[in-house]
Length: 417
Ligand SMILES: [Zn+2]
Image (cartoon, rainbow, N blue to C red):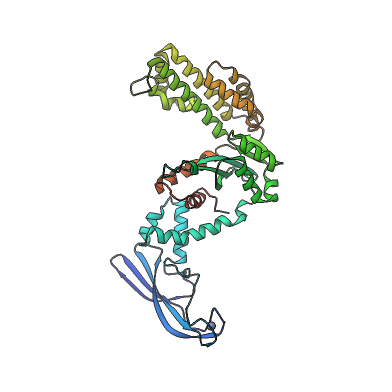
């Protein structure tokens, strides 16, 4: 741990009670006044205690920081402190390498700011104050947008801890879904901006510049007309594709609605424990191929409990058909199933499925484009959403949208160029 400290040497090491105290200082030498440049005279040293990367013990650096006085009588500056940016930021109390360490822990190890602050023996606020400017700098680096050829856009609900601020919860998220040379997607959350509208997405695309926009060949989206308008307007070279994750989610939601409606119609109350349809909620959400024999038996028993339940079964089969299109090994076969879906669902006597069918018909080209763009949007959005969910829970909510954005970008790969 003591190696790799640039510009200082170790004077003294003390270890007791789980605390390693290392006294360091820079070698004597001339220093110019930061105001006038005149060579200044040394005026002794001052002890400055810094938090450093913990090992088996917590680590404190005691930096014997040099104090100088400017000898130029015309200069407004009287004394000034030695600065070693590679050791610590000018007014910081956490070493530069501990800040790098903390960012790495937040990025890869699912750490929390609170937990890291505890390990550094400092407060949440002090650590965040050291980390935040570094993240801001990474976020402001436009090179992180280089090479994006498949771009996803997605409505994003920030689960604000204050329920009174409902309006501020809506964000628009941009995700890099570009495949690498092996055809693998390493989805990265590129940005989160306030609001959910085509205008918001357009403005963001404008900010990225002409080269970025020209490079985007596939634009994935959830079925929201505002985003589509922004794509048509700003991404002339891109094919719009409905994100598979969102389409499957719509189908799952439709089945759930049918189940609740039939439940209400047959029993006159909302589902509760012991009701046949209530017990199969999760089974209905899963893919048929994942069901165990026991789950299948429960599904059959629940459907057979009442003739009215047949409707739920048909809706479930429709959703399974849609899933089958996406899961088909062969894209041509998948497209054939998708065409059947888009041509038939809207005529379904079950209103929820018919509505889904109308949505898909409205989005026919973007829906079918999935099968001609090599599964362009598959899995990436879902993966990013999973990471966001996890980090939200770890942090137990966010009050500040700016912090939320930086933390989510960091966790979901957006700050890794
Ligand atoms: Zn001076």
